Length: 209
Image (tube, rainbow, N blue to C red):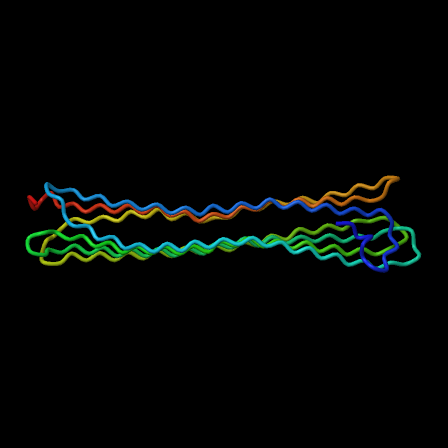
């Protein structure tokens, strides 16, 4: 974007280059293992909702006058947010001598990366660039597991959930002035991830079934 395109601007040869690299990683894996001499009925109900959103907002404000210098303010703000909810219900029961394993798994991931770049250009006596970098992240992970063994089966049920959420941000602002004008480079790098690995083991070996 070139601020010379802004109506009423008298500042010559100001070049603004903004680069944003955003990465969203959202992965869910689910496995069910049943240990026993016979094959039970496995009823698996899964609901996986994965939402990812990236947004960049660039605002340039130019105030021109008759002065020859430039006072340039550059402010960046990065806000990656990750919200993950994992809920697993396991029920083991017997129906006419057949073991029934019911698994209800629900995973909801919301991953959002939002970047704002504000550039305020004023003409002044001298050349000056004021840079400010703001970074704020938010992560939340909730895991709920419910296990129910009916009909006095006494089955050994294990649920292992590895839920990993996180963010990483980096930013750099550089300026260069020569006879050709002024160049402002803004580089933003964001990453946010929400991974869930769900392993369910139902051990029925003690019952000879």
